[in-house]
Length: 267
Image (cartoon, rainbow, N blue to C red; front, side):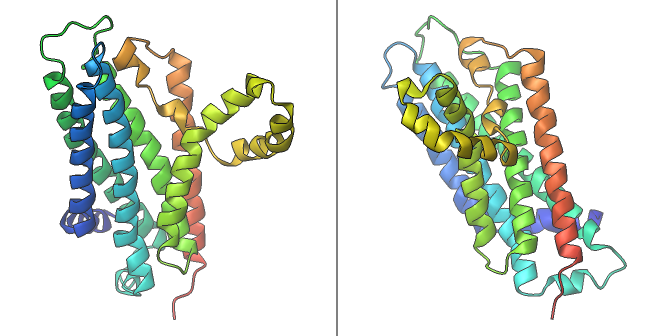
């Protein structure tokens, strides 16, 4: 497994997609810096909010592009056959590649996090906000939550890569999953509150959402940006259980991916 991890790191760091998407991430952080100047009262809070969203989008795209390069492309071009000639299992190949993707995501998260940190510090000058942002543990805990979020999305993309015969499918489904998982929490909350009295809306999409909630995890529960932005620290259970949910969901999907690859024949 170690050799697949190391080779995955080399390929991932050299890939053009990494360079392009990482540049996009830096541009989004630049946008976060500029957005702070449009808020006369809470510039650092606005910059932090926009920046966290930019970091998540960048990490999701990076993870999915790395899956394309490290797994989908090798399966599509039958390069995986050379890897499987060694006395290693297909499970070791997937574990190694997934571990490489997670290491690359963590590395990108640290670099983007430091860039966002600098952008927020430079935003607002000497202006004293009513709610000062917290750029220590709360900030990095939020970055950690985003990494867990992306780890789940990457597991979905990995599973799709072992099933699909269309190269772009893991990227498309993974991105749709990332959007759906993030929006699920807000949708459930809106319906629970009565959907502004729209009974027809509740009746039409309520049963559908009830099914979706058992298939797609609520990734919004891994977004703890209220802590660094407003000092609202999540309760122990509000942070622990979503993290356990994310790890368990990712583990199940990896097992599905191993099973799918084990039964896949290459001609």
